[in-house]
Image (tube, rainbow, N blue to C red; front, side, top):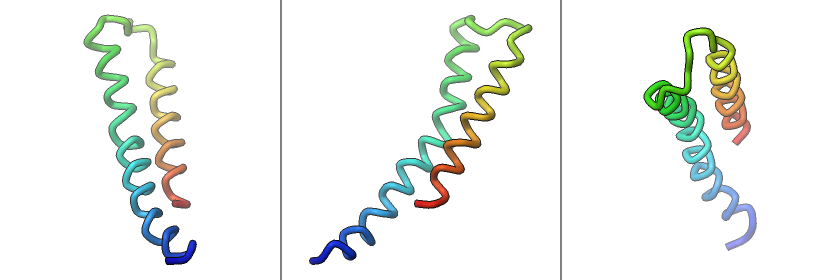
Length: 64
């Protein structure tokens, strides 16, 4: 099996891993901070940071 075939088989695996991280990681971080009481009402910039992180991870999964 040559290198082209291995890339063909590996690419969907990386897409699934990065896609799952992009969908699941920001809500998990947000839920953890809310439930642990580390997030106050004035910390609206935290929600913006989570949204930017989410968009960046989803955008990183597109070229794969």
